[in-house]
Structures are given as structure tokens and as C-alpha cells.
Image (tube, rainbow, N blue to C red; front, side):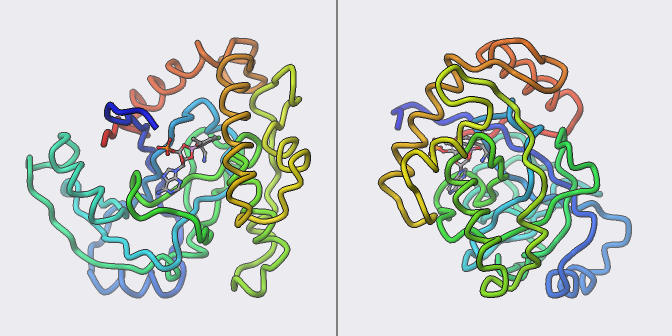
Length: 255
Ligand code: A2H
């Protein structure tokens, strides 16, 4: 971990259809015409083409925060407090929370994931290892390039009934985003298998896989999808980020 502030890209995943319980809460607010977004924080904006779902911590409490007259964000209270001083909300330093929803009640919600090949949307799914103390408490899942995400979706698909989800939600096609000389074009899957990681609870091996994937992807990787196909990750990364921000689909979030 660095000592300076971490600069994330916060991505706006617009809710298309709420899971039942979250829907009841939101409908009770009678905010006709409002837009709601789950807002994951990522360090890898160039991988957003490969989003296949969006993770929340099932036991984490999320707030629904008013951003402006039409828009609301679903994030942790902690993240809202930080954003209030980063020019994200209409009034500097002011937080307006309209509801609280537990992560478990968000599971099954269908959201639009900017740049994802899955234009029909992706599902909100549970991830036990989401930290309430980092980012926004929401994590977008890119199983091609994140070993944590890959290990989690494999576990979800294997135990769909236990998790109370539909198996198909965890089995969306995983496209290749980045080619690397050492680990091929789906480095997370390659490393999870190589290090014999069998569950999201294999913390130590996952830490190692994450380190290897990150270095190889960033320094040796080449994009194999999207507008910057053929470019090195190092140069494509700021371009994809800029594009998302200019399209109003993302913003800078630091902590
Ligand atoms: B990354 P750092 Cl493709 N709890 O985004 C657990 N993990 C969280 C989190 C939280 N509250 N908030 C963000 N994260 C994840 C993409 C990605 C990420 C890829 C590869 C590696 C990777 C897609 N998931 O991260 O501790 C988010 O996942 C590995 C470093 O602040 C975010 O970026 O360095 C990253 O961890 C931030 O971790």
C-alpha cells in the first residue's frame, strides 16, 4: 500500500431493475423519475470492458445518497462522507441520505455496466471479502483480470443455491481484455489455477496472484478489446479513464 492518497475511478452503474427487497425500499420513497447508481471504485478502468457482475458485501449497510435533483448513489456512509468534500454532491460538505439498504437485499439487482460487453446489464452479487473500509464498499467484477473476482464468481456458481442466487448470474461470458506474455489473455483464471486457489478464502495465495496479475498486466499487457486495442495497458489506461469521465459514466474518487 502506498502512503499517499489512493486515486480511484468511481464508475456509475445505473440500476435497471431492483431486487425485490431493495425495490420495496426505493418505491417507498416515491422518487418518480430518479436515477439510482451503484458506484464501485476501481484501480483498473481499462478492464471495464470485462465487467460480468457487481459485488456488494452482504452484511454491509449501504446508504442511498442524493447527488442532485435526479441522481442517487448507493455506497457506504464512509464513502459518502469523503465524496461530500470532493465536489461530487450538489452542496459541498452536505450529505443527504434518503434510505439504508443491506447488501444482501441488493443481490439480484440488474445494473448497466459502462463499457461492458454485457449490454443487457449485469447482476449485483455477494462477495464476503468486500471491505466496508475501502473505496465505496462496492466492487465491480472483472474475472478475466482480477484473481479475487475470478475466485468469487467460481464459488458463487458452484454454490448458487447456498448464496440464494441464480447460477446464470455468475456465469456470464468472460471476455479477454488484456494479453500478457507470461499468463496469456485471461491472467486471473491462469493464476488462480496455477496457484491452486480453490476458494475466495485462500487469502494468502490470492494476495500473491493479485500482485503477479497486477504487475504483469500493467507493465507487459496489451489491450485486445475496445477502442485502444493493440495499445499497451500503460498508455490505454488513462485514455479509457478519460473517456469514461467525459461520458459522465465515471468520476475521480480519492481517499
Ligand atoms: B479492482 P486497493 Cl481487473 N473491498 O478493480 C475489497 N476490494 C475492493 C474494495 C473493497 N471495499 N474496493 C475496491 N476493491 C478492489 C478491478 C480490478 C481490481 C482488476 C484487477 C485488480 C484489482 C475489477 N475488480 O485490484 O487495496 C477493486 O478491484 C487489485 C489491486 O485500494 C480495486 O480495483 O489497492 C482494488 O480492489 C483496490 O484495491
